[in-house]
Amino acid sequence: MHVIVKTNQQENAVPTQAAPEGDDDPFDPGSGRPQSPAQSASKRSGRIVRFPTHRAGILNPAVRSFRKKHFPGITTKLWNDWQWQTSHRIRSLNQLEKMIVLSDVERAAFKQSGTTLPLGITPYYMSLVSPDNPDQPIRRTVIPTIHETVHTTGEADDPLGEDAMSPVPGLVHRYPDRVLLLLSDFCSTYCRYCTRSRVVGHGAIHPSRNRLERAFAYIEQTPSVRDVLISGGDPLMLGEEKLSWVLSRLRQIPHVEIVRIGTKVPAVLPQRITARLVRMLRQYHPLWMSLHFTHPDECTPEASRACAMLADAGIPLGSQTVLLKGVNDNLETMRELVHKLLKMRVRPYYLYQCDPITGSAHFRTPVETGLSIIRGLRGFTSGYALPTYVIDAPGGGGKIPLMPDYVVGREDDALILRNYENKHYRYPEPCNR
Image 1 (cartoon, rainbow, N blue to C red):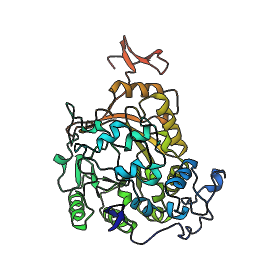
Image 2: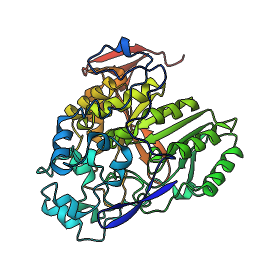
Image 3: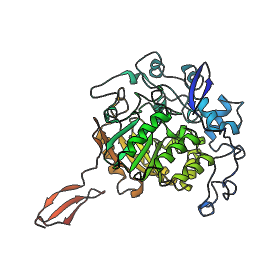
């Protein structure tokens, strides 16, 4: 379902929920009053933690300062309304100029026609962007630059070959036992390195019942499919009613064992994670969620609260992080990110080498950079904090894991192994065994 909302001089179709939802929804039965972060985990065990209401106020000082400067007439209750956040996204050069000092390479992007991905940033996420430092990691991920118009060898609009593996519109069947279901092409905030920049934000994929029924029919006729990943665009930008219908249709298919949702909402629009949404999602277990966190500055109190609500609903959370030059391509930043994610009850899942989408050269690092980061994490921090470093092979080859070389070689009847301290050890393994 969609509603037309006016933002500045233009109208934009954005998904909405079935009924208006604000911060005054009744508390989840039995959940009690919202708990403060200082209260012990044991006291919060088993409770659904609501997103901060207008009574609790804004948790992040930077967010509070930004709102006071750029949205002085907006109440905390309205600021915490995800629909208000969505309809007041920053979408134009004129809006940006009032909030940040644009660099030459940023301003030049708006004078070129070579960028394919539209601009879209929620007020909340914009509050995390540095107003005067164009090299700030978060700013680099959402503000376009002229570098997006530079096309280099090996890049492609669809580097993973998804279109060639789509038996019906909006469904990708690459692996034998799982499919990717694209609900829509709408995101609250657009990442400048998006793999699907060829379609995202252009109105190419709509969550129409007819299209989705064709996808469900394909899944029903393909008993090998046991796992469905719902993505887009961002699935959580649909309203509860439409999303519940999608999940219920998948749950009616006997051979679909698990459903996963891929979303960046907890990082860019944590206000979307409400008690009402969580109550709906928990009806469809086993349900997993793949989140998209890129930098430790995204791990705000608001994001932490959103993740706590999802985790308390029994939804396992994993983070898929893209390795990006000038954003998170060093050991210190990545270690801080994975540690903060674990504290937020999010398991670092994948570390992706940036896909060679058109105009992405300024984001891509050498593969050795990723291997060096994994080498610096392995053994020096918890195993749970260690993501799997992968390249999603161009042309549809799927994810290929990359690991530092810990097997040095063979000597007589033993393998020679290298540990995290670069020391060698012998593991007995007779050749004729």
